[in-house]
Image (cartoon, rainbow, N blue to C red; front, side, top):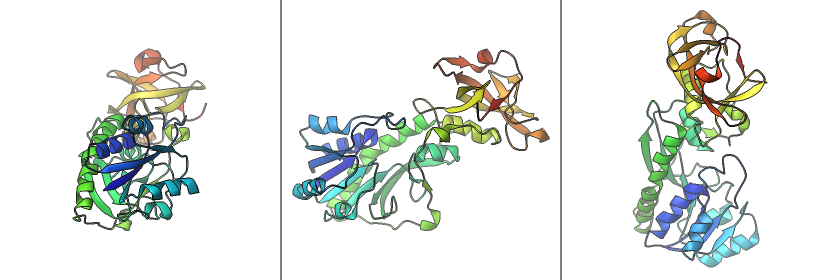
Length: 315
């Protein structure tokens, strides 16, 4: 088959490598220019560099809405388009152009977690597994019929970084297996169960702000979901932003006002958490490591030399 690819960052890079390793011809690759967005500087392996290294023509576009791009795709005469981490909507005149349509690779177990940053949202929400889905693109974002899925379990201490590495390793085999099924005529497409659908928006700095009224187990996952190199979860202490690098749920039960810097436990400092914390029946969040505004990382026991005071969601 002749396969045109739309892709960006490490996800697109892995997809293109799988195509290059296959028996199929790649006449054209379309990717985005580099971005300064905080989440787009992460995992930024260049699709353009990989394509150019192998002599594949590359077009850079922020949006796929110009006649020149459509003409270039038509001239490439693709049997299939494969897309992975293309950041804007593809119009039907593109995704329906090849005889086999467009295969989109999405980093969640659809129909759950359509949209953006699914690994982060899934970890925050306490999902037991995450994965990757190959589905046929249609006019509704991430809602097309499913061809294949691959999943990995979420462990009790996994970070978003751990889950990224585990799921990105699924992309190459998933793409290879999908192309084999499509090219051999053995593909079976399964409609998504829309009653199980969920859609999540693109993350912004505001989404990393800690609310101390949340239960400690949610806050602990919230911290793990924003592990380096992602922007960390943050709070404020004495008017200055403070990032929480690592944390755990306390062994003890603590009462009081959410956000209170209370007592040392183990290798960290307990902060009272949960909207019902005044009852004294809830665990707190043991903050272990923090990062200050100047980028310095410290043990919480070193940063909070005395107990008392509050962590707040605003300066």
